[in-house]
Structures are given as C-alpha cells and as structure tokens.
Amino acid sequence: MRVLVIGGAGYIGSHAVKGLLEDGNEVVVLDSLYTGHRKAVDKRAKFYQGDIEDKFLVSKILRDEKIDAVMHFAAYSLVPESVKKPLKYYDNNVSGMIALLQAMNDANVKYLVFSSSAATYGIPKSLPITEDSPLDPINPYGETKMMMEKIMHWADKADGVKSVALRYFNVAGASNDGSIGEDHGPETHLIPNILKSAIAGDGNFTIFGDDYDTKDGTNVRDYVQVEDLSDAHILALKHLMKTNKSDVFNLGTAHGYSNLEILEAAKKVTGIDIPYTIGPRRGGDPDSLVADSTKARTILGWQPKHENVEEVIASAWNWHQNHPNGYEDK
Image 1 (tube, one colour):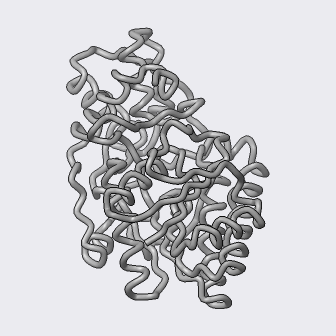
Image 2 (cartoon, rainbow, N blue to C red):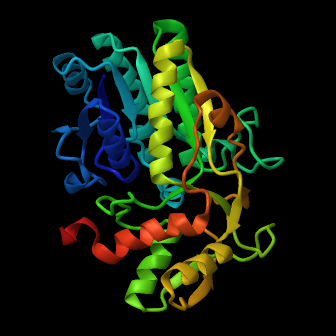
C-alpha cells in the first residue's frame, strides 16, 4: 500500500511514517516544515516540502505517486496559542482539511485517517470519555478539530471519501530505538518540559494552575505512548479499507495522571529531584480528560504496549538525554 503522510515531519507524524514503513508499506511525506523537522523523516520515505492548502500540489502528489490512502497530521495543535490566535487555527486546520478533501476527490483517493483530539469533548460531564460523549470544545483548537470531523462526515456522504478520526488524549514518549522524539518550538507539553528542566537543572519548570477540580488541584490527563499511537493509525487504516465505513475512535489508556503525579514519576525515572513552581492557569485547559478506549481495543484490536506512565517517560527521557537540543544535535 502507498500512503501519503501529511505532516510526516512532525512529532506524531514521523512515528507514523516509521511504523508504516516497518509494516511493509511505501510512504510519501508532505510537510511544510513550519513546525516539523526534515531530520525526523525516515530516509526510506519520499519527501515533498509543501503546504496542505496547496490543492494543486497535493492532487499532483496523490496522482503521480499513485497513493492509496492519506494520513493527516498537519493541523496546528497548541491550545494556548489557539486561544490567542484563533484565525491562524481556523485557516490552517479547517481550510487545510477542505483543500485536502478537494485534492483527494480530484485524484480519486478515497481513504483518510485523521489525527483528531480529545479537545473536541471540552469539559466532559462524566469520565472516562466515550466516543458518544457530547462534543463541546472550549478552545479554538478543539473546535477546529470538531469542524474538521464534521467536514469529513459530509465529504463521505457527498463524495464517498471514507475516513477514520482518531481522538487521542495526551501523546508522550519517543521511539524505543531513540531515533525520533518530541522537539517542538516552543515546547508546551508537560513531560518534555519536565525532562528538559531535569537536564538543564535550572529549576524553571512551571505547573500551570493548582486550583482545578481534581485530586490535587492540577490537571489530570490520559497519556498514550507515541508508538502505541502509531500502531493505532495503521490498524485504523487497515480497518477502514477492509470495511469501507467511516468511524471514530478514542485512543488512550483509561488512566488519568495529574501533573504532580507525572512530575513524581519523572523524578523516579530520571533519579533527579526536579524543583517546580506553580503558575497561573493557561487559557482553554479542561480539568480532567481520561479516555474510554474500549472501542479501539475491541474493533481495531489495538493493544497499547506502554500503559505504565513510567515506561512512557523512560522512552522520552532516552530521547532527551541523547538530543538535549532536539534535532539540532544530529
């Protein structure tokens, strides 16, 4: 199978590229490199630099490379930034999805696996969150992901483009061989910021808010390891092409950890006492997000291999120790 991975130079996309190749597929990557890293792209994949909103380019790649299916990882994904710059998110995320679906129609490519988000749920009425929980996002990022899913739904009805939306919770960790990992600028994610502080020894780590409605006042999240996430994308694509039916799946471990619990786990993994300060809340952050992933486990046969959060942190720690400056080190 020949798969186009859009956003394949990013954190999650690069792991999906690696997983697809190891599963025996041929992979083509399209990435603007606005936030991704060329060095993160597996050398076995063919690479194009360009933007998802360039319909002509995307359609040409789909045709020339005889693509069978698309994986879409090219949405902007920082919650605080989306609150400050909503139009940037609507432009890239929503307009990008429209352009992609138009290009897929033009090239007669009918299968799409989409990187969605638990941010579509907003503040859940009950935990854990199932796929039937109401969608009520509280930030522009989550709302754009919800809109993208709705656009996919109607593109299926009108044009027969079959799709799977994978709503995942907090992604963390790195590849087990240490070759690729998380390198964002700026970095806003909890685990890499803890580990960067551990390496720097600067005491600059901040937890944003300690007055949430949780067991210790800090945000509670469900952490899914990035290689487990990659496995789910491959299973979802195979399921989609076998059934020819669009669907949506949650991806998470069904276990929530508070920010303080993650910090304690990181201290245990690293053997370093990592000091921290409490800062103000960030805009758009729900109190708790924990997944019910029964549907993915049952229908897709997804079995995460790293459900212990210390294992997830250990894989990230291996990457950050060997790449203290990210991909600039290699």
